[in-house]
Image (cartoon, rainbow, N blue to C red; front, side, top):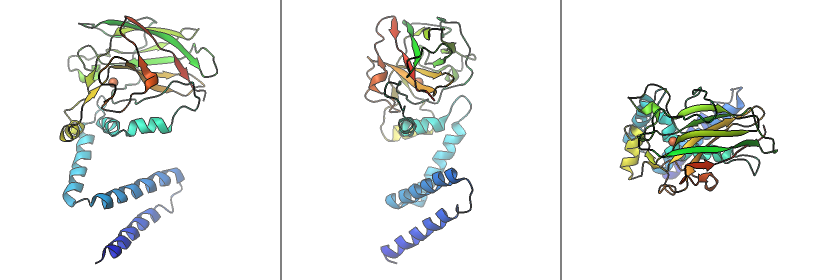
Length: 275
Ligand SMILES: [Fe+2]
C-alpha cells in the first residue's frame, strides 16, 4: 500500500466523521466538534501516533479526570500548563484599549466566597508574611466609577497553599468578596503574595517532571471583577519583583499586570469593558 493510498483512506475516514454531524441542528456545536476532529486527526497523522502512545494519552486524560474534584480542577491545570487557558483569554480579549488585561482563572477559583466589609483582612493568619493593602478604583471604559462592582479576590496563604489545598484549613482563607464603595473605590488588606508551585502530585505534575519544566508561578493575587452592564474581568496582579515572571508555568503574565509590591501599600485600578 503506497503512502498516497494511505493518505486517501485517512482522508476518507476524516470526511466520514465530519459528515456524521450533518444532521445536527446545533451549528455552533458542530463547528467546534468538526474543528476538533480535524485537528485531532491531523495530530495523529503528524506524529504517527502508536497504539501504546494513544493508550498513554487515554490513561493520562482518565487520570486527569480522576484527580479532579470540586476544589481541585486538574483539567484546568492541564489547560493552563499547555497555554490553552491563556489563549482562550487572548481570543476573547477586551474590545476596548484601556480595559484591564485579563489572565487565566486558574484551578482554585470558587464561587460565592465570603462577603467582607471594605478594608477587611482576607486571611485568618499572617504568619511570617508582610502585610499588604491593595487599594484602587473600579471603573468603566466609559469613565464611570462603578460603585456596585463585586471584587472577588483569592491568593495563596503565606505557607504557599491555597485554602482548598490545605488539609488543615476547612474554611475560606485568603479568599473573599467585596463590593466597591459608591465612588468605585476599594481597599483590601492581605499578606504579600509569594511565588508558589502549582500542584505536582497529579498527571500534570508528571508531565512537567517528564519534560523538565518548571512548576513555579510568579507571586500574584487573583481578581474576578464583575458589575452589571459590564464584561466580567478575570485577572491577576503580579508582584513586579518576582523571579518567575519570565517563566510562569501557566504563561499568564502580562506587562500591564505587574505591580510594585515592595511597600505595604499598592494601588491598582480595574477598568471593565461595557457589555
Ligand atoms: Fe494562583
